[in-house]
Length: 318
Image 1 (tube, rainbow, N blue to C red):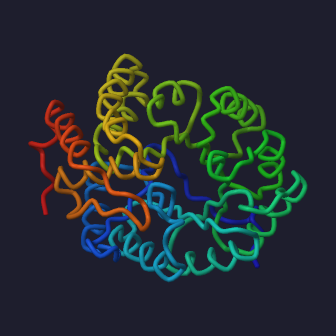
Image 2: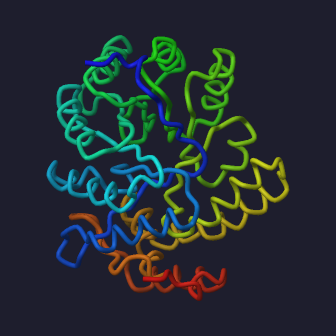
């Protein structure tokens, strides 16, 4: 097996949306809408794709469904941008098994979390990432998402893995802005061995100014062009335009506050899917079982926000 440090590491920077998973009314994967979504994202100028993440509802699908989803994304992408895919499972052995199947579809990197359900020490989490990296032939990324994993990846852990070439980057969804700033500083001091992507989509302007390499915004499934505009402004050093782009996106993000009384998955991804359907990007706003659907009032309010921002007039070409 190739050692992690010897792998060619594709650069994931800029806007790397977590691809949502469109579903048919019966809950089956809507591969036609998924391929259209990929074309919409790439046509909007995004720089990479994140398959099988939280926005993609990966936890709700079987292993075979996950492979079908990522294969459609790979086929529709046709090499136009790099793809990082989530291998999210309970333990190292299960992640390795899943990751190898995903790698065989043609993705460019794998991202995974600390172990789920099990109660592990920092030493054990370190061993977990090292075992996975040694077992796959593409770069491994660490996914820091304590709201779902219930443990935070520490600065020392991440920089130790980086120093040994075990991980190529971090997708930070911790919501810990101080922790992320410390990680950026430590990464720079070490010569920037890691690529750092923020999932904190309403403060991307601040995270890029702080030194993030890019963003993984679920909202890009609804309005990808806005994030590309934000990124382009930041690379020009035009921070006024960057902030203006962020403020506009934050107005779009108000869609996630329209559903009430639902789970986190139903509220966030459900709002995205309702907006994507309203824009013509996907055919149905179906959520993975047993996630509740949005009520008609929430959908109407979401469509009203899109209309105010002239996002309903610009339907996606089929």
